[in-house]
Image 1 (cartoon, rainbow, N blue to C red):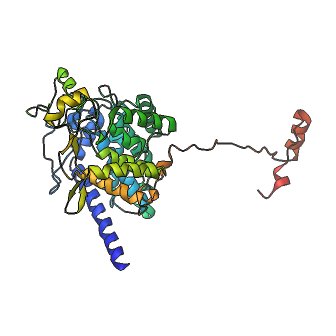
Image 2: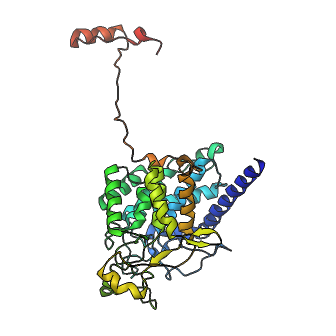
Image 3: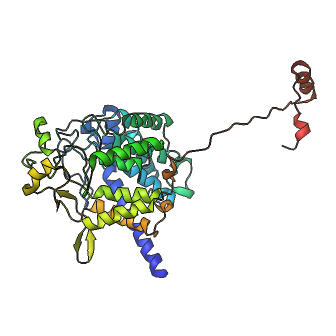
Length: 405
């Protein structure tokens, strides 16, 4: 018991250190937040990646697709969930002020084109900014989670409370629901949307829209080895020209049917099924995912993706989804590996949904009972009572008749 408590404390403090490390990295660019609130220029945005040793930037303002509303939103959503669970991440009013500024940074996500979760902009990787459903959905979740949150927890006060304009979350919701299941102007849909119709964002309140979006993603992007990120995605395919980052418009058709499939999205499915209580479906996906893992030193490692080898490309073009694929990219892919462990813990009931989602965002899509407003009319005194009875034939008790109230 004592050893378990010690490990729990160590894990908690590791999380606090990680979250504060990201906070310090972003606070080092606080001047950019102020500029972005006025310019909305991608060159004034917070950087998307930092040196993990010193929290400094690693590339210039124009050398990467830094404007990623979803990344900042995910940080704020995670901060809210952790604070609600009892962890204290924020310690000073200066830090509270910066977090409030980050809320202002993301609140116009519904009209702010960004580079999206894959950091490259439109499908051709030409750094063309687009409105992305995954970014808008994550921003909506962050705004709702941060509203009236006290960053100091039970020991806070009005000074440590975060404020959100309610209209901004509503506008994000309206734009998001009008876009789904589409991801952006160039992407018919995207497997990244799984993160906003389910864990961790739970941004969509209409169950029919959630089901329709999931069905579209599974139909268009699903495969035996995971899911494609989006249609005609050339990343890591054998037809990709690795000497340049962008694709020519005519080149995209070369990637059709041979897009890499990512086991990562099976991890999202497992977690979402567990949150919905559909453990049979979660178990089916776990069996598929276990077969895709690479065994090393007795451990199952989740690879980044599965690609079609050069020798099978012609066959895959003619018979989509039939050829054998091989693992590619990083292994383990830490994003997928972490979600794989979370999914297994949920499935085996070592974790409860409420522990991952203390703010109960998973209940967003549940049907709420109709709100019934009941009004009781009382006469202030006997004179008013007599007047109402005489002129309107209303028999209304006085406050004295039913006291004490």
